[in-house]
Image (cartoon, rainbow, N blue to C red; front, side, top):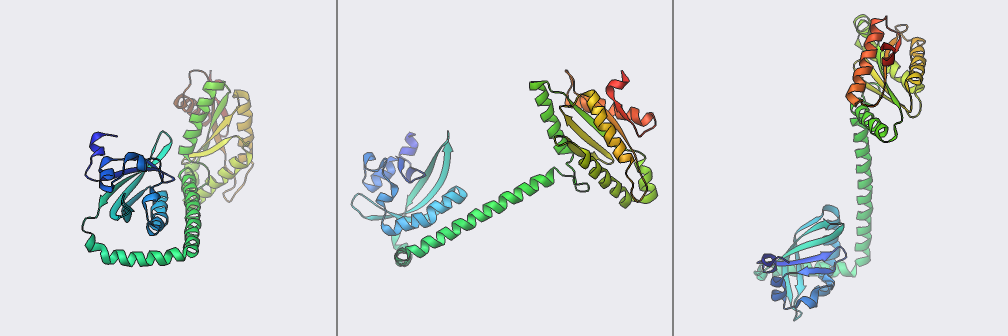
Length: 325
């Protein structure tokens, strides 16, 4: 123990999660009349009265488990002569190298007379509570169940928030953030396994005309319709996402150039064969297959270049970057 902590102007006791004393400073030993051997590897409750043990169980442990700290706990400890010494206790849970300890700082309450009335009242209440321990334990069990329920609700809410953060509100597809994460994963998989994968960028043809002619509400319906078509025709391992505006994207794992063109062509035909309130609409697609030396950015650039070619060549078609070589 550090020399300054050993003789700090307050007591210091470090206990395990089970309450076993792991370390104690000289200030506390001198104050209480104990030797180092009297307390080390002993349970802290060994120097507590029955009433204070109940305080410790009903407040200290639940508070440490919930928030990792306890502040200004009024508690009395028995010194070497079995005299009760009042303290204000502050504690904090600390984990180092996987080992959990609870560090406690104890400040002696010198003006005890100011707390006599409160102490007598608390003692009476605690004694009554001790004789009704079955009821108290039942209440603690109820609190524990409520905490578990709240934790489960919190985890569920966190899961919902995570899902919302990666979901496009209009179409229900995954958004650009999720797509980028999955693209990074595919690049990493390629680096370790050399398994091919392809990227398809999909753009609705003449979408501005749809909005200008039918209005943005109808334009939104077209976007939602395309999302449903892509989802229903995508394979189980494919990633479907909306990049933004009228652009969508597909990540096709374990798919080389020729197979990616077949997948894209099936999707193009499915879209062209779909009818809605405005009649029908078409899409143009650009594809790139990841190759040695590529990055996520270069793959996107290649797919975008292929998409531009599809647009330039009349739209409603599929172009792979390899077709341009």
